[in-house]
Image (cartoon, rainbow, N blue to C red; front, top):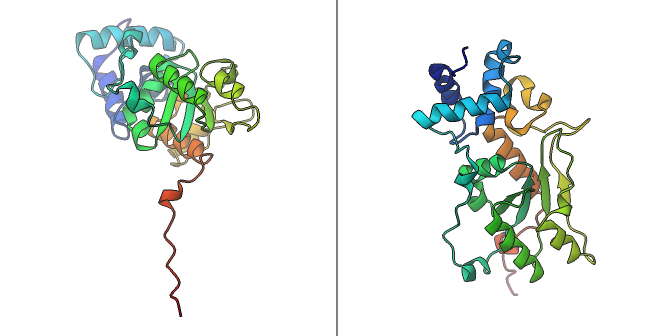
Length: 239
């Protein structure tokens, strides 16, 4: 492969990712390339690959590839503040990179599963402010932390989780580390072929559909059940 990316190869890798996921990141494409062409590893670091991929999609977009520039993450939800106050998520998922937030947003699970996904860098800022305000008004939710093996940040040092801890001293916050770490591998709820998910060191090595399913399943396990969804018991007949 020359300095410029092979468009046909990238399109082929993207098509494989689209077969199981509606959206994927540049990191997902990079790791797909490393699986398909491991001999290219010494020549292409992920950072260099993503710069080249960005130039490639500037000329013509690739279906399913999420925007790679930070400017694409500055949008706001079309919801009025008063409507926001009427809702609070069933669980909060903290991730270690903005691209992973984008991945979850594109999957649709944020709305379907009532999960708020935020990054430790404080983005999306409007979501962080919403959660922070709601926590101060008494709302609570369990927290999951999804991260690469090399990420060594403690999420409760950042907002809105710092406020959550401050306001929850009498009632401990349910929390689980869902990331990859020394001696800990991602459980793969979809049985990813070849066991590659179990050997992953970075989140984007795992197929997006597997990663989203894993995180949603695990973080919702901590959420209390909704009594409105409990089965209705048959009324006892009076004698």
